[in-house]
Amino acid sequence: MRRKSILFVASVVVLSLLAPALSFAQSWTTRTPMPTARWGLTIGVVGSKIYAIGGSNDSGSYLAAVEEYDTETGRWTIKASMPTGRWGLAVATVSGKIYAIGGLGNCGGYCATVEEYDPATDQWTTKTPMPTGRWGLVVGVVNNKIYVVGGSNGSGSHLTAAEEYDPATDRWMRKASMPTGRYYLAAGVVGGKIYAIGGTIGSSSRFTTVEEYDPAADRWTTKAPMPAGRCCLAAGAVEGKVYAIGGAGGGTSPLHHSRRVWP
Figure 1 (spheres, helix red, strand yellow):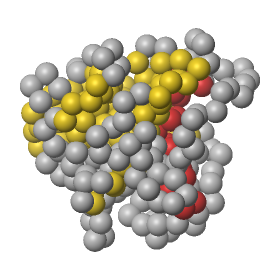
Figure 2: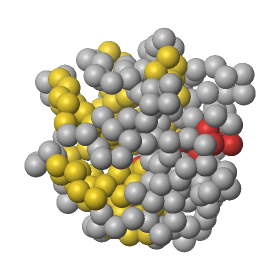
Figure 3: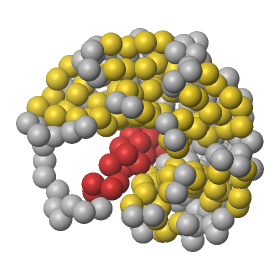
Figure 4: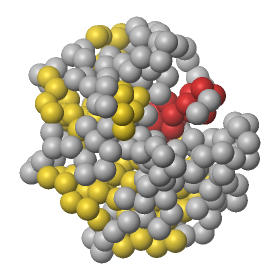
């Protein structure tokens, strides 16, 4: 995949987690640069601190770097490295701990790796791996359980697999498969339901697809499609609505569209 597409991964993850804050901003301010330049990273947020995790650089290395940004002081701090360097992973925060899931990296290829980071102790712990290794996936958290959706594991595989992780028991459970296999999609959580939005299966395919997952019923429902097909987009939930932002439309051109709303 060309680097232009890869660069969108960081935007997807960052905007998915920070969309609620960005929606109320009146202006942009340049802050202290991150110590390690990279793309394909992801972030976790705990309290007023942002953790930049993994990614890659111009040499194609799988990075394990973890750096903490304190939004109150504007300072970066280098933290304990993630055990498995990777990019294209997903991150979820539950009970003050960050879970780094999947990706492509130093795991022999498409990672099933799950590693837990505790900001209070600056320590990583390896957890039970995901049943299905993948990258370009998305996650949603409902009732302190993490739901992993979509992604790819190479060889033209565009995954429908949905899997539930319970951090309290360190156990995985397979759930009802997503109707439409895809990667580089986005997700938002509203009212205990997860909305899987857009995505691609490669080439110039750009999905308008929106599918809702109800963990309580373990059931998927097809919802009204987006007006414009796109992948590598971002999504965030604000006041009971999911906003789909940006992404790549037909071909590789980035889009500026926003404020597409579900449910």
